[in-house]
Length: 172
Image (tube, rainbow, N blue to C red; front, side, top):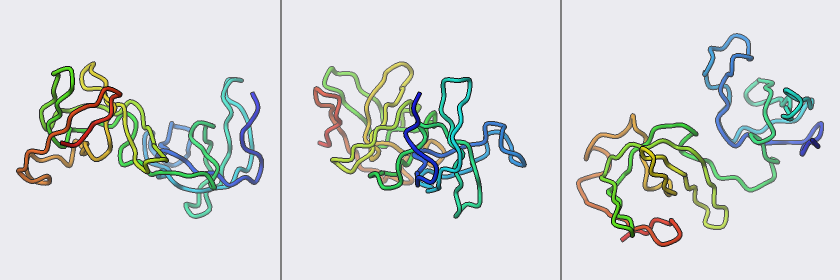
């Protein structure tokens, strides 16, 4: 177990960080840092002897927080902000036709299971669980569950997409 970062390295959190119960004065589950926050490594430790934990000082937020290695990248690395979080409920923005004749109606609810930034295309994709059906979806094809009102935000047009053989959604 060799740490990726060293004392003084500038790092960025790649997803929102919520209180796991170890941050004093905040409720469990409360947002501590928004994705993209940049801080400096102040200490390196481990948890249960198999996870590297970095104590990172986020000067702009006025917080020092323990972050797991997979939550961090070097501040100098390319980064794309994601609109949705892991385990967040989302709806499809439009109806979706798949090549194998399976389809999803506009507004179908799913849950984010993985965030997939594509730095070459400068777009963010997600693996979404639609009740056991897992699809790779572009961010533009999704909308927040809470913010979704049929026809209110997206207009009445019937945009449709088709999935290519490699799982990519193609706009028709």
